[in-house]
Image (cartoon, rainbow, N blue to C red; front, side):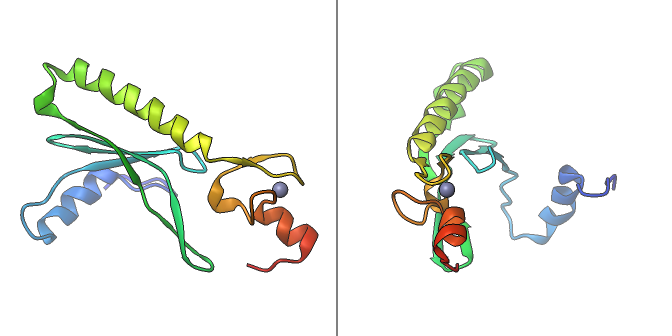
Length: 136
Ligand SMILES: [Zn+2]
């Protein structure tokens, strides 16, 4: 199994783990674009699912990525792969725009931050810790 220092061979891992799971095993591939995340794309044999990247704080210190459903593109609805990919490109661009609309400007550091990094509507968590002594 080829492996560099920090990255495993995803296909080899999936092939090794799939037989352990209960059948049927959906061999989906999940891609997350952006850092912080913007869009989650899951490629299934039957289609492409596009989600807006969102985070929920279920308790302090434990953010959980929860994709907000945005588009479900079924292979059967498109005449060919090219048409499916065109629809996916548009859905990804629209989902990314929706995610970026949720970013807020921190009035203290002047940077745009995703909502999960904001302390409140005007201050990011980094500035809240540094300037106001907030402890997360
Ligand atoms: Zn800030």
